[in-house]
Length: 343
Image (cartoon, rainbow, N blue to C red; front, side):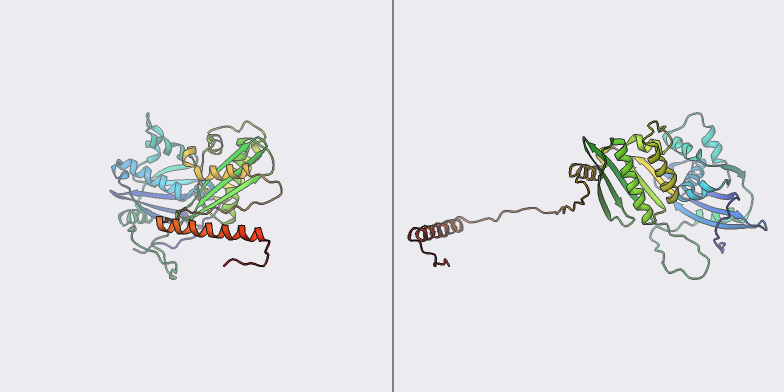
C-alpha cells in the first residue's frame, strides 16, 4: 500500500487523528482536510509496546496510542483542535472511570490540556493506514538512511530528545546556577553560572531553568525533557501551583510562554535532589566561587595518584646519595667556594 505524501498543516482547521492498537503495537496517523475535502497526511508513526504495556486491556491500548500521539506531536495539539477517530472511545474510558490508577490519572491530566473530540470510526483510508502501521511496526534493528529518495516516506525517524537538568543555589550574598544537558547521543554538557545579584533559592532555580531553556533554543531543540529538584518551580510551570510571589511571575511567564512556547514540546518532571547531583554541584560551585564581572575557568581533571614502590635496597641507595650531596654542600659553604659544581 502506498502511503500519502506528507504536507504542512493549515492553521485554523481541525486536525484528524487516527489511532489503532494491535496486540503488540500501536499506529497513528495525523491528517487534515484540504479545500476539496480530501484528507492530507501530516504525520504518521508506529511503536512497539514494552513488556509492561503488553499487559494493558484493549481500550487501554487505544489510550496508550493517544498518549503516544500527544507526546510526539504535542505542538500540533497545542495549536489545533483534534478530531479523534478510533474503534472505541479512549476519552470516555479515562474521563468517566470512577477510580483512576496512577497511570490513568497521568493520562487524564494530559488529555485535559487539549481540545479533543471523539468521532466514531468509519471505513476510510486514514484508518486503514493507521491499522497497517500498527500491524507492521518498524523493527528496532532497522536503520534509516539520512539520504532519503524523492518518493513517499513509509517511516519517519524520531531522534530521542535531549535531557536537561537544572538547579539553583543561593548562599548569603552569593548565588549560582547549574545546567546539565544530555544529548541524543549520550554526550554530557555541563554548565555553571555565577549570578551577579543576590536572590532567593526559588529565584536562582528560575534563573537556572531560563539559562538552560535559552541554550536549548539556541541549539534549535524542538523536544526537550527537563528535570529539576524544585517542586515549586516544576509545579508552577505545570500549572499545579499558583505563582504567588510577584518577583517570580516575570521569570515564570518568560520561561513558560516565551522559551517553552518556542521549543514546542517540553516535558517537565520533578527529580529528587539525590538524583540531580551534577546540576546541584555546578550551582553550588558557581555560588561559592562568585566573582563579580569575572569569568572563572576551573579545569576538573580525572586522576589517581599511585606512589612509586621502592625496594629496601633502592631506598638505602637513595638515602646514601642524599647524604653525600648534603656533605658536599656543607663543605662548599665552609670553605666559601662559589665555583664548584655538583655532578
